[in-house]
Amino acid sequence: MPDKRYYSLVREGNVADITIYGDITSWPWSESDVSSYNLSKELDALTDVDHINVNINSYGGEVAEGLAIYNALRRHKAHVRTVCDGFACSIASVIFMAGDERIVNDASLIMIHNAWSYAHGNAADLRKQADDLDVITSASKQAYMSRIAISEEELTELMDDETWIKPEDALRMGFATEVRTYQSDNPSQSARTALFRLISQAIDDEDEPGDDGADGDDPDAGGSGDQDDQDDQDDQDGNPDGSPDGDDADGGGDGGDADDPDEDPDENENQSKEAAALAAFILSEQANF
Image (cartoon, helix red, strand yellow):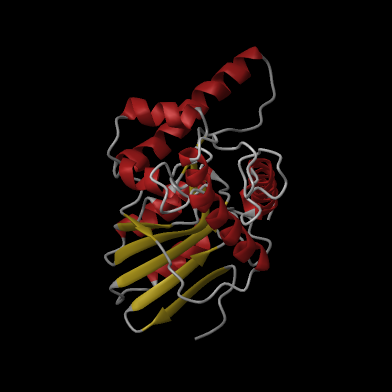
């Protein structure tokens, strides 16, 4: 099979794969651009294919070109499956709606908005341009309404707000028919991911009931300050927990025994704060990835 380009149409048996990874334009200058004229000619030649897969990653482009591609796919006799591989924005989201099956990957987004344009002229010209844009937008709305499960009023609000639609929302509203999720069984080789996992586990362990230093044999286990059986013996001897006794090496009455140096509550609190700060830093770095 030939190498996949930004835009390509590859046929294998009775299945054709179309890749649209660029702008939708009537003036295709680079290999990533696609025009309705070129694509429609190629679709017309696919007279004996049963399935067409259209993989999309595009910011959109010209409305007229996108509507023509959408209609060319809708009228083809083959079963059409559209797949959002990254972004399906603007008129590219209309092309996405041409699929009988519409699959969004779990790491992909759809964006819809009203048609827009540049304008010049007098006041009458600008008013007409605004009215024309409303009509142009209605064509895209018709494509959405033929598939989605929400009302036209809800759709209008989403388009007015220029909305980015997450995969689960696309499925719920009917823009998509399936969310494709990839699970990897391969071990992670990311030191940052492994470190964050260890820190998260440490924080979870810190928050678990009965995990704050209380002895498993102590019926008061739950962070009350009875750290071991020696402190329980203190209670029986009339010494309150945390008061100095002969077994306390430092005699400071801080509730900790010399045998349990890790039970300093200030140290535990500092460790938790340091772990939380490190986890927050790692999360911020991941967000910038």
